[in-house]
Image 1 (spheres, rainbow, N blue to C red):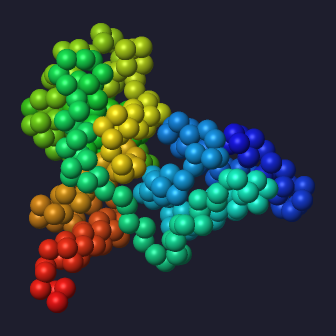
Image 2 (image 1 turned 90 degrees about the horizontal axis):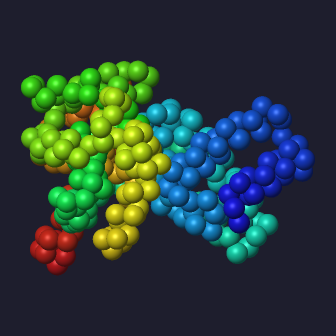
Length: 293
């Protein structure tokens, strides 16, 4: 079943059968449109293709943009939509049944395993435009801790290579400054050797001479994951989560990580401390053999 067909049936149900208020219907449509745009970026246009991880990745992507109450409302709307569709077509499983996120529970973001991160970057050669482009693009995404929208909107005016700093215009037009690693600069110089000639000041330019899109970033990552037989499902936002966790594991102060990520509230950054603790507990259980006696 096409997602757009499913939406049409759902809106008909809440409008005609449930007779919800016009404002409520408009709110549901707004929430679902944003959700479907995310799925479309990931090249998902059929209900049968949506699984639990896709929804969790979507919640991840909006977790830093919306208030917790808005996130709860978004998830509630998504649950209602999937519940309705599975009730009229039993062949379509409701993926939200396996999502357990309480109102006060913090959702731990999904990290990229070190072996998978290494595999992704090792898959790029130094010959084709596509690989050189991806190597630079995903290096910036990871080593600068960028949101996808921040990555796609980067321009040369944001670069200060002399001081190895990049200016990021985040949500709400907030500006922050993030260090550029030597490796990121090296990959940028290599990419510039093959970058299409254009007056466009955006750093990441496609062969079509257009700036790279959010949709391209999502779809290219899925292709890379599939081609390299990576079993875990990751989204571009996973690079940002991994960046933050690696900083903390390396000894960075939580306040510094907050500034690098552009979080206005340190409570948002603290979620990575919980994730770090979870990983430490997992390592303890796996390697501290005495504890198993």
